[in-house]
Length: 189
Image: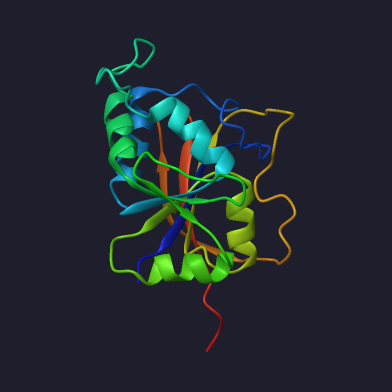
């Protein structure tokens, strides 16, 4: 079984809007590139899929856009070539190495987890909340930025159940951001 990892940038006050934290730097891009390389496939909701595709899909010209810093290219290449699964009831079709996930969310994601491989990665806001409520997330990874955003969507807002986590890894970046990795606590035997 491959684990499902929820990874996201978050501010100290819990905001997980993609523009709320520190601007990406070479170190954070290396960090996220390494995380992309730890998984076999990505799992997105419609909004995250469309946002990621607009930013990280390689243009038809085969040349990355001028706005992209050279430290972002390895991440762009990793996410561009990754297998993707998109949960959506409104999209009729997807491309960019993607397939639609339909039907019962819990069953469909469990089937993806049951496939052999290194892992699945999920990002975004709405889909991870639903997956956490279903108990399907095996690892939570937050890159916590030393910023107070004061607005925007907050991390796992509306979670139905209390979930206790064990810290399994911690890494400080030169920017002041801290990468924290947690796993749900196992129930006592």
